[in-house]
Image: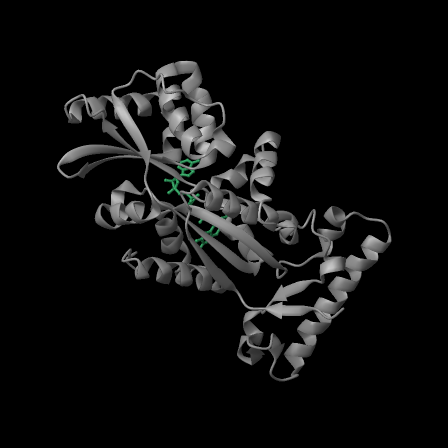
Length: 338
Ligand SMILES: Cc1cc2nc3c(=O)[nH]c(=O)nc-3n(C[C@H](O)[C@H](O)[C@H](O)COP(=O)(O)OP(=O)(O)OC[C@H]3O[C@@H](n4cnc5c(N)ncnc54)[C@H](O)[C@@H]3O)c2cc1C
């Protein structure tokens, strides 16, 4: 089988959705990237797939999500900064070191205070178990909101009997974005991207601990059946034609890289034929191996990524990615100074 070559690509998946169905579908897409089992996606496969991940404790895939709540004083009580501020401090003090996984911001809407609290599903699952031990009222309050809006993930959590003088509703993507554009520090939305790049670059991407990742697994994917693909190395860029996926000329360098790819793929297949499992046969696969990775995070995490990786000191192929990510955010009016 001939080795294919591809160019580095960034596919924005935009804001993590607030509607349950879309949120489940996105998490399924991210999760299935690991085993390359996207062909198993059907109209209604997402719920069972995500529940399976949750039950098995594979919670990192559930990080590609975002639930943002708006909290207001109950209509019967007078709007008061003070009561919301007490709630904010109580929530943060209970979270301790987990606070970094949430965003908590005091906003003003129509001259009234609104407390916004954001977290991905993994954060909420782990935070709810902490609240259950230390604050039944907060557990009932946030758990109730999560159960109402995301019953497939949070069934059985929370209760209406929380006894707190507040109401809670979900904030939609547009409002999250508007808040970010007007008050950049509030950092409420989560942005998801898919990168198609080489395995050497995914290794660099996953160093960014402020972001969340699900990447193609060289342990579980068997390239014998799928074929092995490489990313185009810099020295071949000029003669690669993206439209056809072929090189425009058969020069010495093209022959060299094609022969290298063919040899490596042959070694890999020989190892499988000797009975080695894909997770062991992968030892011979190169850094240039084409890989797919979903990456999610808030503006603060992406801003840090752009600052470090769209730089002359960075690897040229991660720089291609960082530039595309920068452009995406610039289109939203969010800038990182060079
Ligand atoms: C040009 C370049 C060359 C590099 N060369 C090497 C190399 O030779 N070897 C190598 O190992 N790596 C190398 N790296 C990777 C680098 O060391 C970082 O791991 C990577 O850039 C992620 O950056 P970060 O840790 O600032 O970001 P993140 O991990 O995204 O962290 C974001 C923020 O979270 C906070 N944070 C996260 N975790 C902690 C923690 N445990 N304690 C305190 N604060 C925390 C900090 O405030 C940090 O600013 C290189 C990176 C670049 C850009």
